[in-house]
Amino acid sequence: MADALTLSRPAARDAGAVAILGVSKTFHVENRTVHALDDVSLAIASGEFISIVGPSGCGKSTLLRFLAGLDRPDGGRITVDGEVVDRPSLKRGIVFQDHRLLPWLNVEENVALSLRSLAGAPADKKERVQSLIDLVGLTGFEKALPHELSGGMSQRAAIARGLAPRPPLLLLDEPLGALDSLTRSYLQDELLAIREREKSTVVMVTHDVEEAIYLSDRVVVMEPRPGRIAAIFDITSRRPRHRDDPDFVATRRKITDLLATR
Ligand SMILES: Nc1ncnc2c1ncn2[C@@H]1O[C@H](COP(=O)(O)OP(=O)(O)OP(=O)(O)O)[C@@H](O)[C@H]1O
Image (cartoon, rainbow, N blue to C red; front, side, top):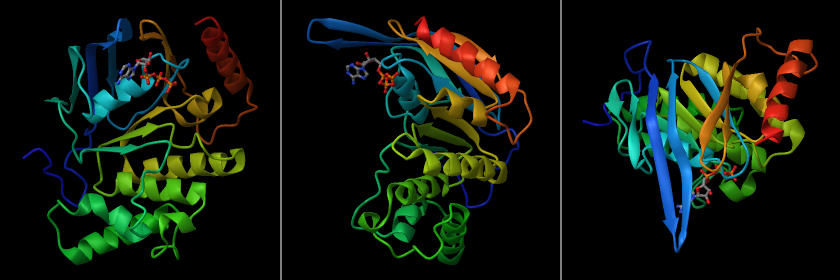
């Protein structure tokens, strides 16, 4: 039973621990060979918030797709809680930059989609859906269709959908990338609050170094051709963090300087 989740929190407090071991991937397109990832290894503790930053083409999304089980590496392996990731699972929620809500379903129905295959009483599922809609600040918009929502609201609905089955691991691929800066910083705080409440491990790909430092326990900086980990920064300052704090500014400078050389 690959998806033995229930509506209650999946057992252990140490769920969502990730091991990425020597992962490599080469794409062959016509007569071109792209070393998208080369020998990438990373251990992520349960409950950690990790951001991955790096120049375009360094393999961030490829790595996230592997973590989701949407694709497989040619070499190495990935485990979550000791289980090899070789297919998608409700144990790993994923949210993309474009919300990918089904246009013919309303907010409530979109959020409920990923609960369909889980055991549980319909009333419990309904309660879970409503609590997530409340959590992401969409109360009152349960019956709205995606085209009736703003970009930020659609992204919140997508986050609620990703969280619905209580995945121990939440994967975010530029989830706030398409939003204006005000909505973006508001949703960053919401992401922290959601993570605090849901206790999921989070792996987020972002192009925004400031966002990565603001949210994460560690920032992984990747370099391209071949895609590798160039450095890992521990962000130990207490939350809420302040973007003009000297430590914050110094870390941002170190990361952007490093990125400028890649
Ligand atoms: N399905 C595919 N077929 C061929 N090449 C691919 C495929 N997916 C990714 N690549 C190549 O692998 C490399 C890494 O791509 P990936 O999308 O993971 O990078 P990224 O760091 O997420 O980039 P961006 O920041 O621009 O989204 C790129 O050179 C890309 O062209």
